[in-house]
Length: 119
Image 1: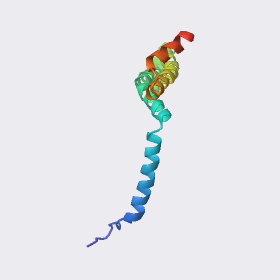
Image 2: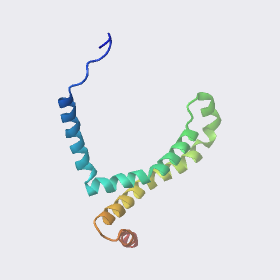
Image 3: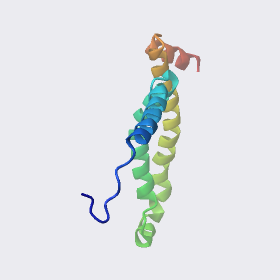
Image 4: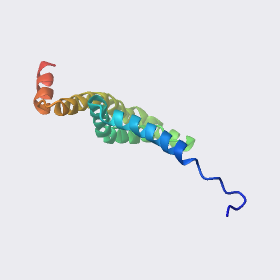
């Protein structure tokens, strides 16, 4: 017996139909080699993003009192943040290329090494 304030049960056919459609779309994108390689490259760059974010937070703290204390050191603290921001883009590009080459059956490390030697 339903009590006041309870929601009616959802329509099982409509919910399963929408869930099935979304699951099919998700499976389609999860099996795309290029998207999987890009995902793996971005996930691998997360530690660099976190470290860079810590330097940015140290250089620009949220309180005004801390900003006055850190102001003389702010340019020095922003150098690692800027360097890591640039390295993230390079790391994602090379890592995504590596994972894509590996998924295509190519030799991932040797392809990345050849590209680095040409550059």
